[in-house]
Amino acid sequence: MFDRDDERVELGSIFDAATGPTGADRAPPADDWRRLDRALRGVARRRAALDAEEARWLVAAQRIALHRRFGHATLAEYLERTLGYGPRAARERLRVATALQTLPKIADALARGAQSYSAVRELTRVGRDDTEAAWLAAATGKTVHEIEAMVAGRRPGDLPGAEVDPTAVRRSLSLDIGPETLALWRDARLALELERGGAVSDDELLAAMCRELLGGGRADDGGARPAGGAAYQIALTVCPTCDRTAQDGGGRAIEVPPAVGARARCDATVLGRVDGDDVARAVQTVPPRIRRAVIARDHGRCRVPGCRSSRFVEVHHVQPRAQGGPHTLANLISLCGGHHDAVHVGRLRIAPAASGEPTFTHADGRPYGAPRPLPRRRAATDASRSGSHDGPLGDVEQALRGLGVPAAEAPAATAACASHLGEPLEELVRRALRAAHRS
Image 1: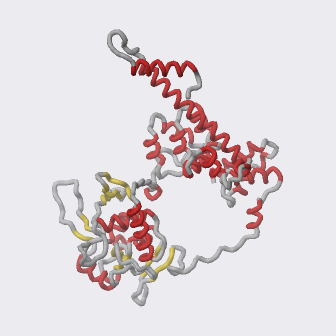
Image 2: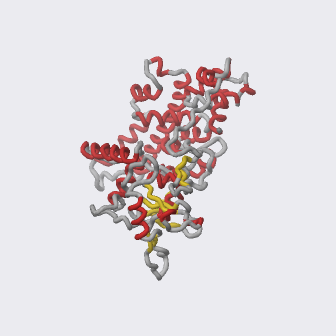
């Protein structure tokens, strides 16, 4: 629907010209494409302005808990039942609306139609009041897909072009599967969880299934990789100068975390340099005969206490090769892919002991599997649940919680605006939101 009658008439004339008789006696106006482009751009601007207006109303609805007036548990439920949003879209709308309260430049770009809602949704993930201008400038002229790539892996406060931590880059994979495949997926998850003795993420499950298909499964006579073969026969490229690692996948080189490269160096087939005329002979980091002996000694299973995994077993150097660790039975140990990764990212530590049996500890020094000590209860716990401020500051703290600020962070953010008491509540909330965003 159009807001102005002249736009409706203009659209009608364009359709008449496009569908009516053509020829020498009725040639369509030469500037029809310009008018159509102008109309579409106008629709996009008005849509962006409506998105900006909706965001302002959503903040007000959150502030007064509008959903309770209709008997809904959350405002997201109100958006689903009343405005027709899906669950994910409802959560994102609320997140963006809250973020725009502390990002006036990005909010203004949306209201003017200079950026679409989809672009603003991505910019609010990384922008702060001191960096939003830089992000808006970097996003100018880019598609939403390009903005998503520019934002991926960066955190609030980062500037465009900042170094990206590959572990922070997550990618969504949408699959169209039937009920039988879904049942198989659920059975595969259960089997892997029973084998590892704990819950596994979608990422871990899919990686395990892919390794199985690519020949990294059980070292037996069932056609899979023999016990002497290296675990990593997937193509990884390591830069000799900066040590950054990329993995080939479907014809693309995808940067992976440094831990993947370190893990591969333990148990891989190394091709050497492939950018010259001379091709070196491929060698395994662990000689096949030694690898077979390690796997046999450990009964083909992960050695971490409590782990029952006998698939995707890899060989790890207890003393790293970079520190002079040798290819000896005493320095090599069998680990499943999950625990091998935990070692290289620092969540699990393995050390040799005088008895010859390695010791396994968590990063904080606890014996592996020992329960984490319970935190001491603080006297302020009950106060934080009911609100630690009175009067106007109490109203600010309650508003922050209504806007999604965690209860543990709301009191400190509220205290940051104590010196501005006397200002309108809306301004105090805005100051407190800025403080929470910086922290």
